[in-house]
Image: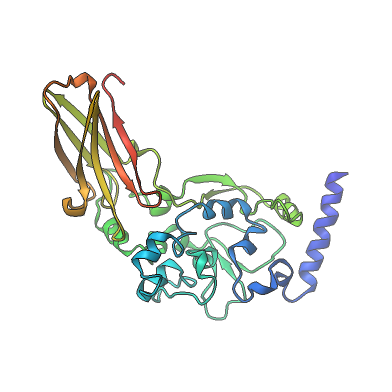
Length: 325
């Protein structure tokens, strides 16, 4: 019975989509035309929307750090990458005219800029699996599996990646492979408040896709080497950057990696990379000696590698080394 009802509803929606010249006007809010908001995309892509909403991309324009550094967005040369119009592979990144507070939003990456494209034509790396076309789609676009997509704004990181050597016998990982973890799911996802989205989801099929949190990889041990030698009065720390770009990378805000040591009754820190210490280049190994009181036993020394989290303004642990762990 449920399957029959679902089939009838799907048929009705399909007929509706085929009977009007612009079916997207039914599913997008009128106030959003010609530029839909992320909330419009959420209607059929809620899971992706929620990942994006918690990411730095969604706050690229509104974050206090950016507003402060850009004199409340008056440094207009920065605005293009913090509230970009739909990206064109061959043209400079421009600031969009609407919805600046959404930062790097769905349309920034997925709205087609091709001449003659129908209104609201979206593009991406996935294959269409639903028979209903709410908006035109350019599927399996190879641009979305390349570093050049991210490099339209992250130019420094792209140049570092291009200069880095690949691991022996392996290809270099792309931006997407590191910062958009793989997931198997459907392109569409059911929205809590829009029942019709469940019909689209039911008609689609799962694919190998990527999450949209754009976060620093959690398992730091996979992309850097970290060894500690404890001696009386000091600890020698060696860090090997296995990433295909500098550590830390980027040119905006405070970007620092430090070594922190703690022991009963004391602590010490020293900058390893970033700031005046300079970045640790791809493939580079850096050694640092941290002095500790001679009375501290090596077995009581806890060593951590930490990065400055600009969003939350605190130090976060990348990797740590405890005796006997």
